[in-house]
Image (cartoon, rainbow, N blue to C red; front, side):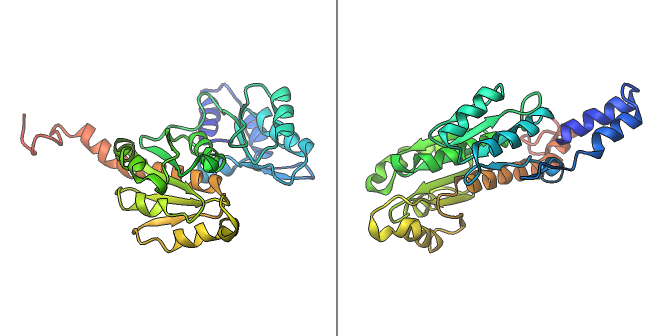
Amino acid sequence: MTPEGLRLLLGEVARGETTVSDAEARLRWAPVEDLGIAQIDHHRALRLGYPEVIFAQGKTTEQIVRIAERIATRGEGFLATRVSPEAAVQLRQRIAGVEWNELGRTVYLRGGPGGAPATRGNVLVVAAGTSDLPVAEEAAVTAAALGSPVERLNDVGVAGLHRILAASAALERAAVVIVVAGMEGALPSVVGGLVAVPVIAVPTSVGYGASFGGLAALLGMLNSCAAGVTVVNIDNGFGAGFAAARIARAADDALQPARKSLRSNPLRADDGGEEG
């Protein structure tokens, strides 16, 4: 159950449209649903602001579909990551409205009237090379599913620094930047030296032998000389997208008191504090 769903239910009780007993029955089975193969945490959105995400890797197609159907049946959206094409076909056939991102290996079903509430600040996902796009797309879809407007900047690695420098406008618009890179993993340091917002680095397993499946990029990012660069695990686009959306949401929440103050104050913020 989402915070919006809980507020709607409480509103129905307050208006007399739903009895207390009916509301209690709807809430009684809400926290955890035991399917035997999985225990679905339906109250995660109430606690964390975002529903449980299905990690499809290692699960059978039937297990994935069964979990997704139970979430969808309650009117809640879901995000599934690392979804095989075979599982994606079954999900699209059995659940109306799902969106399959083949490159990012994600399946997304929008929940509620419009999905997660949108954040004001956008997330910019930067991919060093075309080979990094699957991980970058996973990050982009995740951030978007959690309510953040997403921009993409592809194939701007350090082999041609003019490409990232030419994208200064996109960098300046971003509230959070996710930088996805393999090989030696140098791009996050470059971006970290250009922007004043949080930078989340994602090492990928792209590279030749001495890249050690992304370990070289991971170590390079952990040793970045640019201050404030945060690093997630190898190929963990989901983790980066989730973290970026949380940062954008936290920034919105932190600004709410100031916005409310400006709305209620007859003095405008841009007039030097004097009456106009």
